[in-house]
Every structure is written in C-alpha cells, then in structure tokens.
Length: 626
Image (cartoon, rainbow, N blue to C red):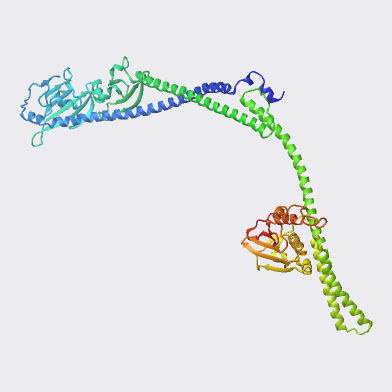
C-alpha cells in the first residue's frame, strides 16, 4: 500500500473536505477568538488606563483652573460691590459714631448697600459681607450663615488682610477666602472698607464647580496631615477623614498645592473619580471588547467557510478538467472511482497523470532519437539527391563540354603538326616557335579552366558554403559550359543584367546549379523548334531595396496548364523515358528556398516560358541557414 492509499484509507480519509475544513475552522475560530479577546482586552485595558490617566490629569488641571478663577472672583466681586452707586451713596449718608451698635443683616435680609438677590446670585458665593469705616472699625455686616459672626471680624486689623486683595487665611482655626476693597468718596478718598468672605467648606466647592459638581469630585485637604477640609460631593464620604481613607473607593487624578495665602497655611487641592464610576465604565469597555471578539471570530469563521467552499468548488472543477483532458486529449483513461476527499482525489489523479506523462516522456525521447536518425538519413538522401541532379545535369552537358574541349585540342593539333613540318624541313623560326607554343599554352589553360569548373561543380557538399555574391557574376558562370552548345543549335542569347545590384548571401555552386538546370531546360524546350526564332533571355533587376529578381525566359513550346503545378515535384519530367531524371526543378526549388527566396513560373503554350527567381539582399535579409 503506497503513501496515497494509506492517507485515503480509513474513516477520516472519506470525510468531505468541506466538513474537515469547517471543523478545523471552527476550532481555529474558537482559539482565534480567545486570542483576539485576550489581546484586544489587554490593549483596551492599557488604552483605557492611559485615557483614564489623561482624562484625570486634564480634569485635574481644568478643576484647578476653575477653582483659581473662582478664587479670583472674590476680589472681582469685592471690587464690583465696593464701587456700586448704591454703596457710595449709602456710605456718604451713613453717620457712624464711636460706640454705635453694629448693624447686622441676617440670611434673608440684604443690606441696602448690596445688590438685590436676583443680581447677587451672579456673583461668587458670599457668606459674609462686612463693612468697616475708614478707621477699620466694624459698622455693618451681612451674615448669610445663620450662625453668629465670628469675633475675628470685629476689627479689620485682626484679618491681616492687605488692602484691595484676596487671600486664604486661617482665622481662629477656621479657613476662609477673604477679599477686601476700599469704598471711595467722590474725591477718591477712602470712605469705608468692604470685606467679603466665605468659609472653605463643602458649599464653597459646590459653588466653585457649579453644574459640574454632579460629574466631578474635588477635595480640599490639609497638606501636612491630609485631613479632608471640604469636598463638593459630601454624600460620597462615610467615615473617611483623611485622603488615605479614600484610596479604596477613589482614584486620585491629580494633587496641587494652593500657593495664595499665609505661609503657615498649607492646603492641597485634588480631583477624585469614584472607583464605582470607573468600574461601570470598565465593564462597558470589556463588554464591548467581548462583543467585538465574538463578532470578529464569527466573521472570520464565516469568511473561512466561504473561502473553503470556493476552494473545494475550484478543486472539483480542476479535477473534472484534469479527467476530461486526460481522456479526450491525452488518451489516458482516468480511474473510475477514487477514495478520499476532494483534495485527495485530485492528488491521486495528478499522480496517475504524472506517471503516464513520465512514461509518455520516455516514449517521446525514444521517438525523438528515432526521428533524429531519420532526419540524418534524410539529410544524407537530400545531399545525394542534389549530387545526383548535378551529375545528371553534367551528363546532359557532356556533348557540349566535349565540343568545348575539342576546339582547343584541334588548335593544339594543328599547331603541333605545323611545328613538326617546320622541324622536318629545318625551316623553323625561333620567334614563330615561341608564338606557336604560346598558343598551345593558351589552349591548354582554356581546357584546364573548363575541367576545373566541372570539378568544382560536381564536388559534393553536405552544407551550404555561403559568401557575399554579385548575382550577375553567378548568372554568367553557366555560360562558360553552355555558351557554345546554345550557339551550335541556333539559340540567340540575350542578357539584360542590371548594373550595381545589391549583393546577396549564398552558395555560388548551388545557385549555379539552379541556373544550369533552368538554362538546360530552356535549351531542351527550343532544341527541336524549327518554326521561329530561338531566343534565351536572361534578366536581372531590383524589385525592391531588399529583393533582386533573376528571370530566365525561352521561346519554346511552353508548359501546359494541366502540368504546371507538377513541374516542381521530384521525378516529374516531360522528357522521353531515359532522358532526364525529373530532379532538376525540384532540387532548384529546394536550393532557392534554402536561400530564403521564391521561384515561380509563367508559361503560355506555343509562346514560351519564364522562370522568375526572387532572392533577398543583405539590406533586407531573410536568409535561413540550413
């Protein structure tokens, strides 16, 4: 049993991939939800504590600013009240005498030198408003506490209050906020002194915080022993007497010391937040964190399920596609039934397909080697075919070549006979002898050139030997062998060679073979024609900057339309049996195509034939090396 069969066997292997992944995703969602809940909760706690600290610090700073403004409000209140018209008029009319009884106004009765209650409520909280004469003696007092006036207010000197200033002072064991302002007459002289005061108690802090008292908690305490002096929310205290007693129920947001007062008076101002408020806020945050974790886990689970449904669907489609391609295009019959889930089935199918591909690859490699051997044999056969075509063309040229060689031989014979006669008769002239021998050498050179050209032409070559060529020179070469033959049978040769044509890249021997084949075919077509003029026309011209054309035309019988499409087929010939192999045109077509060119034919029965060869120049090379 292989590894795939082991994995696909058993109950687990037959469970659907979707169910497996759903179970895995469910477990992952639970674990992930727990991790997210822990990390998110931790992050929220840190963020909550940071924001809480920042909030407390901000509130503490704001609360202290509120208290400072409220404290300074006493001096502003004293100044405003001392400079009212009613105060100036009242002091001017007052007739205070030494030993006169102090006039006291109780809580519900306002003195005439104070504004009405509807106006006074916009000032800071005032428990005592004390009016002294210019000498500092107490004359009138407003007492809003309902308790007797403390004796310390009986004389202005006892208050130790700098003129026209406010401060916090401890008088007879009681802490006060005090502010004084001179009441001046029309000449600007001091006519009286107004002092406003309020005890440092819970009411003062409630007035200080105003509407914020329901949401913020501030406390005043002794800076030395931390004894609580006042709090704006006294209902929050039970038995706590010192700041340390508040640690179990409150969080301190900030502490600061009051620096306006007597040197011996040290007071601390602090902002508090009840732990119950913090707990409620923390529970809300934690509840939101849990909801976020649950929603996140559920969303991830749902996303995983959707993704896995999509993946399993795509796996089924891929499995179906692999099965179809294997059967219809590769000819591999897929197995009928495979065990396991969708992924295991696809894995088995791929393993089977790859095994078949490996076998097919080995077969293809063997076939490729066989084809390589066939291709090598084909190349050898092609080379032999080209060589056979050369030899066949050479065979047809034998008579002409013999004639070409016979002429210089006859010349040599005549010269030699003449020399022999002169020698026999002892009348030879050394000068004439040199001339005669020079003629013999010329004729020998001519025969050597013909034989050398035949030797080069018949040489067997396996591959093309390319070089830069002048197409006109290549066209002229065949006439070294064929010129006299053509003239002997009355063929007129016309050459229309365009000068200065662009060079081509090619094999001169193979191209010469093409032109010899075409000229020989033209000769054969006109050999037995007795009716009209026999003319062979060779033309070259530039068709385009990247194309030169060679045309070979004759005035022979022409090619019938019925066989025009067959003339380039191997072994097709119109000659009588035993005359020609039928390879000339097919080999010529192959050689021209090897040079990246095109060969075509135009013919009309009774008028003649034109073979047109189009070859690429070096300026637009399409040359293909074989």
